[in-house]
Length: 375
Ligand code: NAD
Ligand code: AHE
Ligand code: ZN
Image (cartoon, rainbow, N blue to C red; front, top):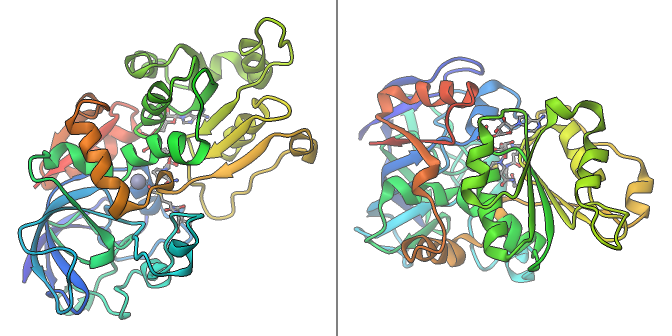
């Protein structure tokens, strides 16, 4: 069938709005009509050409919500009409990783997902008979897509698609990094680097967890009121502080008898490897944990003096906030519907698919928190 899509034709080029062809779901797959999709910095990362796994031509997008319109043979967990959120981190509940209970990184279909194809090694998308690549197993920049059954989370039907699509990546990643990965305890001191679509969700996760001190760091002063809106207690402009940023942050966290200073938890939400080092080194000696959320381009590496780790700081990473999608995403949708977490104010811009490139422009200009395409 013909579907409308924003096609990534090559790295660094704007998306082309066009009609592409989509084959129906095969065994174990479902077709979903995407009703809304967010634009995450990771889409920009891949479109820019920095992603070592980036493939073109492809249909990007991984932060969607929609309705199941058709199921392939053998599908049992969802049916036509179900409301779902696509999962770039699936949950098969059978692979060694799922069964380990130690990680959310299901490995059932990761290899083919990285090759831009469905688990049987073929693509459902094409244009004029030429194959197109899927992206992160989701391809939500098309009004219909096909996903493996294990890569959709069934959600309640009263949840608005144009808001809960953000749970498909940003919300779950930010809040999950706090509650699943760092397991932040009440009273903690935390530093969040990068107050964008992810960082603000880390901040609201920290507020939820009962952190006492939440320092936000950005290079854009416009982000200060945004951080405060979700629970940030202090703001630091990294550019204004200059080379002494780590010492400045460590000083800010000193209190009472503790004149060593350093945060209990820090979070990198920038993808900048220099910032990742600052985040690690701003942790408290002996126990501070730094969580890397940002993704960095091909060839980028992190560095620090081993002394930083010898003296008890811990470097960790998190993907999709450590969430097990089919289990946790419906619960996060409930948190939103029950008013426990906020989403609406972070969606600063909405647009039709035809204007999707404007969403990328707004991100580059630092003017948006999240742009959402509504089909
Ligand atoms: P965004 O563009 O909305 O926000 C990035 C923020 O970082 C901006 O406010 C920007 O001003 C700030 N920033 C840039 N350079 C900085 C610096 N040197 N110091 C301090 N702040 C700086 O992006 P986003 O959608 O929030 O994504 C953030 C990162 O998280 C990206 O790298 C993205 O690819 C990654 N990400 C990872 C996961 C995961 O599962 N690990 C999930 C989603 C996004
Ligand atoms: N292709 C990139 C990897 C990028 C990356 O780490 N992606 C995160 C999700 S970002 C969502 O906005 C992720 O889930 N990682 C786990 C995984 O298995 O990819 C690269 O650098 O190769
Ligand atoms: Zn994302």
